[in-house]
Amino acid sequence: MQIKELADTLIADGEKYLASYFLSLDKIEQINFNKVLKAFIDNQVGEQHFSWVTGYGHDDLGRAKIDQIFAQIFNTEAAVVRPHFVSGTHAISCCLFGCLRPGDELISIAGEPYDTLNPIIKSLADFGITYKEIPLVRAGPVPVPTIDFDAIPEHLSPETKMVFIQRSKGYHWRQSLTVSEIAKIISLVKSINKNIICFVDNCFGEFTEDREPTDAGADITCGSLIKNLGGGIVPSGGYIAGKKEYVHMAASRLTAPGIAEAGGCMFDMSRSIFQGLFFAPHVINQVLKGISLTGYMFQKSGYEVNPKPDEIKTDIVISVKLNDKTFLEKICKTVQANSPVNNYLTPVPCKLPGYKDEVIMAGGTFIEGSTIELSCDAPMRKPYTLYWQGGLNYFHTKFVLSKLFS
Image (tube, rainbow, N blue to C red; front, side, top):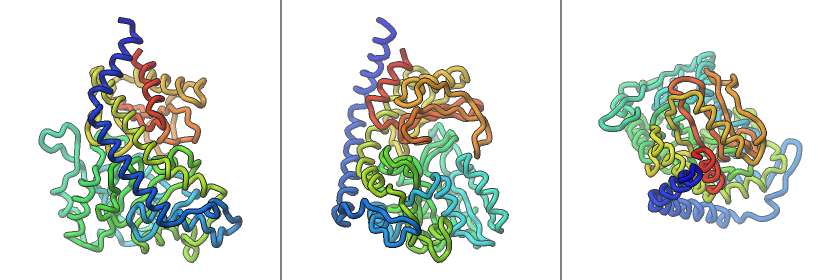
């Protein structure tokens, strides 16, 4: 059998193996689509909401409507959705610096956060805010580290103002958190002190399940619009959703006290935000199918994959332990060469702001850094773990896999 035929056979076998799992993803898409459509209908979106105002952005009907729709989808009191968020990291920073005050304590529940959050956490000390994290543990037959629920009560103190729950694994070999696990964490924290703010970094996680962290009791959550909820067409921005008090405090950090969520020019992006959100449930379905098939093919080729192909996906990222620097670079080059944009470029490892190690990134995306589009990246450190993410179109993922495994 020819090499190309072997790749096609592996893909066909993977689709057969994942058929019932794919049906479960279709059900999740349906639930989330119904939720989005209901929010559009309930809030009576009209063409007038696609226009925008300049300058201070006072009385922007579209901006207000977007905030209302996001609040309804997340089942929260308020939301602020703006193109001014540079990234998900920026939105997280606004939540931390907006809600915390000198003397407060922040605790990370899921071990060390994502690399780009380290400078933020270090700078909290400059404002008299203390920080600690609860290390992950290996529990029972689970092959990857997980949350140490027993350690949570002993780490909380009278000074604890906020617990930080990072849903996605980041550059760590652990399980990403399901909404059910997040609900368990929040319930435990609130049983000890109901006033502790439970803050969930929702980046990469939106619409991967049939409910969001705020449905599970999170006080505040945030994410990026060049990830899940932008549907692949929003060029920049992010969102924060949660209790009105905390959203207002975070918005005051984004703009200024006294302005908060009341101002901000939308730069003619309202239509894209509405439309991207409408597309998002289907795009996430395409992504989850693509990363699941990718996991199957790497696993069948002898590599350790997290999560497993037919395991619950609670974010749009899979990790593959390659233990091979050369193969890692080859994968990134293959993804780049089969991208719709910049396919003629060659990805190479380099230093990037916020990362401890050199990072190699591949992804000829229409929007720079858009991780909802098919891309992959990895810190250049042992065991050379690949992080494969996104894929607006399932057939694009299949096409790249056919090249990679040929």
